[in-house]
Image (cartoon, rainbow, N blue to C red):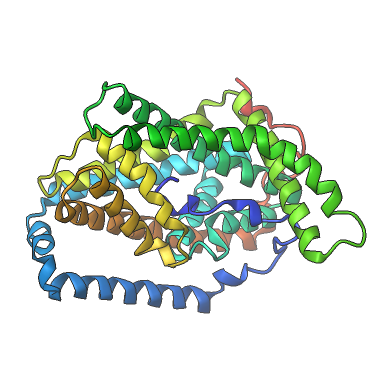
Length: 373
């Protein structure tokens, strides 16, 4: 649910048998990346043309003309901090003994890839999985930790929905009086938690043995592997959380919190101040638009965020200018930083000795660095 593209889709499709060993994932080949860049550029030009030419968007144009550069610069700086927090959480989740240089290169490359690739493509998490495998980590470990990392970062978002929605429903925070708009997201969030922690393990335990039995179709066999890997990831997430690693939790919380402040700063840049609870819930719920398979979620996320803000009482023009500024920062900062990190990462991976991660032979047991020093 987080706005960052790295969380745009579940990594459950990352079957350990599908991760390439040496070759670059197909969606990250240079000709495909260039095509994605062209698609992103075309989408940006189309959006800019619509804003400039459509008569009904005069309020949006006026709002954008009143931008305060200082707030946008602050937002850009905070977005960099959000990206760095992601790197901290990524390192803690996959290998806390990995060097910070390699952690930055892999984690930031993943964010950059996810900002350009559509949700249906290999995604940022898959790039991280490929780089980790090239660095020596076992496929089983990568699959489990990829699912666990996704679940942990998503759990932070879900917890935020429950806290903010409950505060709205009982009147602690100002916002819409509708019980549906305040308590509804809380009910959905709790249902999601129960689905993952209670219903899914039972369903997986029943279906995996049946679907993986000899004679079953290839589709059911693949589905069984995905369910099995996801179930292992859920268990892994519980183990990681029980380790109480401040770097993992702090990084995951910072990844969301800094990005939320960027969202608020983008509205302040245009003199708009929607209620903080409205911004929080609209931010958390509007990311469902990221499920639309377009590069960087352009269009889908924007529509989801604007729609959620309008639903919670923000004027449409105000919602549009704030979201457009926020999405510009969210797209280009990870893309630029990730692109530079990816160039350095490719150089690192050419040197097998330098690239090898010290956790490579530690498959099942958590790293000592995950426990208190």
